[in-house]
Length: 249
Image (cartoon, rainbow, N blue to C red; front, side, top):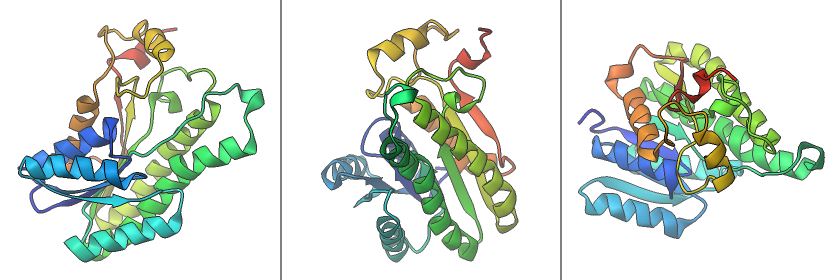
């Protein structure tokens, strides 16, 4: 087990990619914190991990609220003593034509996808600095400018994920001196239950491997970056999209 005695917070982990990440890190021995907006759903994932012999706790947290983030991090440190791994996975999106986007739409998306990740990272990094290091892994998107085309009707989501990628690379430079590695994973279209059928159909046309990705395949990349095998990987952007972003358009 490569993550034995490590503590990991995974935001947005009550389902989909976040849940797959939590299960994978727990399998490698980490004590995982299931964090999302529904305590009931978080507890279901935590119980699943516990029943499999792993360690997990459920903490309700809306990462658009700084107060809730600080409360969550305080609870984790109180229970486990430290935070070794943070996976900023929580994200929301709105499908709407650019000319119809409202300021409220924009602010809501950025409050979770970018500001929330910033606030979580800042709170956790302070503890990581005291404890001698850690890993921050941010889940962006190929739509952020990693070579893939931007999906239509999702301008605010695309912009927020691009901002997250840029923030991650700045953090990687600044936090490296404290033993904190910051990396980014850019998934392509993942069959997580949250992707509209129209987007799935369009994406399938551009994936050389001929299928959509699975949440477990993102979880595998996260597990690698969280492990000692990735000690010298910092500020990197790993694209997990079946080769779709390499296809000439």
